[in-house]
Image 1 (cartoon, rainbow, N blue to C red):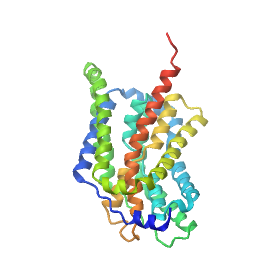
Image 2: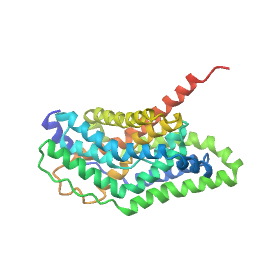
Image 3: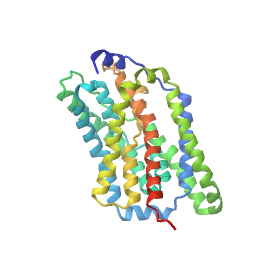
Image 4: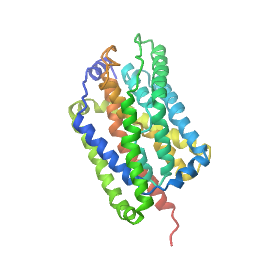
Length: 319
């Protein structure tokens, strides 16, 4: 891409619609309740009694993905602007996204491991997101000789609390209690809620896209391939590490999905809901990369889940 394209991207303004974000949060909470209907408390004991998968999952999300993203930004060279590179590093520094729990449920992965990894990475993001962004953001600017200071990130504690306890904790607790004490109700609700969840996620894609459709349409051809490559890197990182350490199939699927689905919503909150980045030069590339990640990882997550289910169907012995 040439400098005029970079200038165009950096000059774009992407806005968040508060009503749309609230709707998405309500949908996520509803979906998490449906996922939790298939979870029994004893399953978490099994996850932490064999912590190998949890440790590897944390290494993928908190260590490998930010490092490999930094190396990818260097490898892409002049194909991306410095602000697009910082957007990629910001996304990689964010914790796992809540929709990964639904994707794990859909693909018959280890749901309890998925929930555990999401909760742990979200709790640790108060420290790890600012650290990884500062470390690799400054390292990138140093290598490409861009004279700009990467701002120090401060994670809004309320957003972390809301993510863990409201969007994740409360629906999960209600769903688990329903499965434990009202098993017949849970069995009747599980299947319909699964299909409703798929419909909701398709609606989320449209909702995320529609409010910023003009900006997305104007620059999608420039950022689509970049986000695709980055997301593939994330998915392959989780799958490769899990396969190298010979984790069980459900755990391999969980690490693939957890590493490939990032909480880009937190990145947008940091970019749009705070004044952290106000001292940077025009940096619309960061916004566009982060916003499109939020749309694309839903599409890629559903695609990967479908591939996993298709693999099961093909490998299932015929009666």
